[in-house]
Image (cartoon, rainbow, N blue to C red):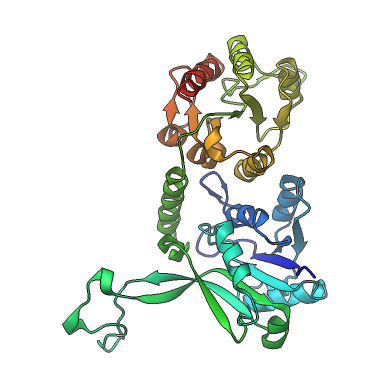
Length: 386
């Protein structure tokens, strides 16, 4: 009989160290969506976000409507208090669903380096020998007591780094446990514990603004390192600031209009003739955009998208491709994670500075003035090498 494995992400409204930390955008997407997005594509059967923030619940219901795997529940005020333990919230949640699972996986929203592979490794280590698993980092730091005595090495015989085993430090990212162990110990860990090692950067905590900047920089570099050179089979485009110049014109009656460049439409038509799939992904939900894309005969149009990276990951799984097969054209911070992750990222010349800083190609044309046509030409020339 297949065991039911659930993920649990506890979130509290607000934050003392960093204001609204869980909802604040890290590389252009809310911090909590980094681990939630990975959980969606892991071997977990269901993922629960347990929060006292109604805005987050509404966000999840709208943003993850395409997967029944994600559920958002309102936690009690008592369990969301500053002095209440995570275990209290865990047990309150488990009782609310009558312990309807076999394996429980606690995921921390403040650990954005968590990958689906880390989650799966923890799940796979649960067996007859281990009733719980946690993630750790192998640190090679030399540790000392306050009285000036060393903890983990002999200072008179200082080892080389490559000869030093170091220590395993709990990074607080992933904890898995079986239902019997959880009910017995009322704790995230059981009696027989296994470990899963994660990358060094996952040990970083996000408590201050300087922590935030450091973690964001490392995430950007990690996304870029994963890029590979492959043929572009799909191009994904934002709308405002890419198809248009980013401005909206209002009439006296309150209606608004957008201007589109006809040359951009021709470039996309030519791309499709070379079997490159064209997709639209925008945070705006606009009838004007819908009508323009119908005119261009673009079928894959995703409107009102806030977590573009998770949606893109869902698309590539369905299409049987990788991120390296995707070209992405975006202009603002909500495009940033995709800009850093796909095979080729392109930005109009008038895109925001942070996007131009990390895009692979900064186009010579502005948005709404030939930028897409230029991007199409680049993709066609690039694909000639394959």
